[in-house]
Amino acid sequence: MSNLPVQVTIPGYRLRRQVGADAVGLWFDAEQESLGRKVTLKILRPEYEANAAARREFLAEMDLLAPLEHPDILHVIDTVREGVPVLMTDRIAQEHLESLLRQGKPLGEQTSLVYARSAARAADYLTGKGFAIKNLTPSLLTLREGGLRLIPFRNILRLEEQIALKGKLAQDPNYVAPEQLVGEAPVGPTTPCYQIAALLFHMLAGRPPHGPALPKEIAKAHVTEEFPSLKRYQPFLRKGIYDLLALCTRRDPAQRPTPAAMIAAIDEMLDAAPRRSEGETAPGDKTGPITAPVPRRRRRRR
Image 1 (cartoon, rainbow, N blue to C red):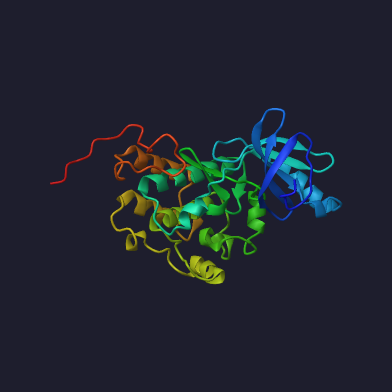
Image 2: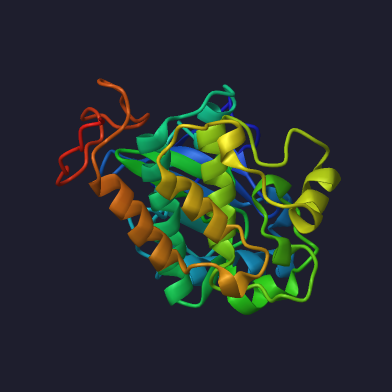
């Protein structure tokens, strides 16, 4: 316990190291001693143990996240409500999408589409339940075999709560839809499509759409400027990618596709003949290169 930032003991669990934190909780890599299972524990910050409001907020998050079950969202295993509140989830993977993008290099078509599909699947699942993703950033997306997994801590909220937060988001502005900041258009079920498109742009271009710049300048660009053309950075990608980005980044949310339609478009591209170089493997894929389920025959160029 001496290497931990705080002295805390959770019966039945051996805490290994701190892996994250948010406004009310600390996240720890841990081992469930009875099963020898590696998990992640989120516990109420020790300084808030006597704070009734912080405790209510922590318990409310438990109630919100516990019923969610999707392969692209970190899954809640159990909760402890008495004493120090504890939220137990699958282990947060050490590899995050952020570490890949920090290198400033494009990830490639196939890998980028697979990762965007994971994010769209998570968004589609949450939208169907009346929820929204507050902060869709690479730091909250971990790598898993064949895709990504969203960390939901203080990151999943009801759609009406997201609407009320317009202009008050404390998050990375690179992946924020215009309606989350200002404007008359309402935040709605197509909002995550803009967020995912901005993320897909970053994965394919090796840089965020309006960055690098100061956060205020990036946020302003999402509202006042046209979404940049990916062709400027990657002129030889398949046409469907440019079309998808153009649709998903329309200023009016009503003119964008839903997450389900975005998934269908990505599936169609992934079902087509792969265009990545031989031997290219998606990071986090332990079984080898990601291949299309039913590859179609290529046309010969004349």
